[in-house]
Amino acid sequence: MQGRGNIGFVGIGTMGEPMTRCLLRAGYEVVVSAHRNRERVERIVAEGALEAPNPAVIAEQCELLITCVPDAPQVEEAIFASDGLLSG
Image (cartoon, rainbow, N blue to C red; front, side, top):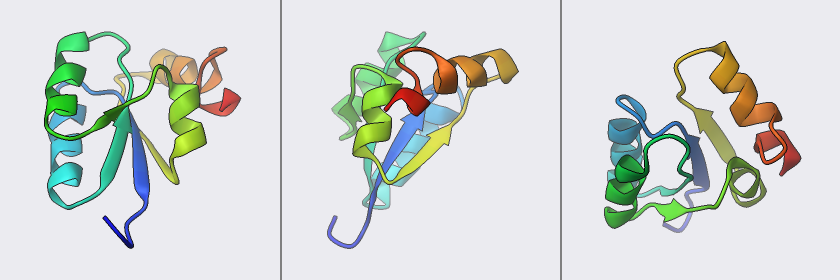
């Protein structure tokens, strides 16, 4: 993966799982964390993604952050929670 930065992906759901899979196939290192659906995260980790314990760790480790969550309250939680992206 030389020459490609790593990507943090928050929201491994109906849209996030296939989007993450495409990034992995394109050669990116993708870091994810479980929030609501452990099963999806386990599948995508089995395909090569790395798992972080929370979004804050994703923010510390990644050059680019992508959120793919359904609505504003979940975006706010992913970003502003005590272990959210901004705390990393």
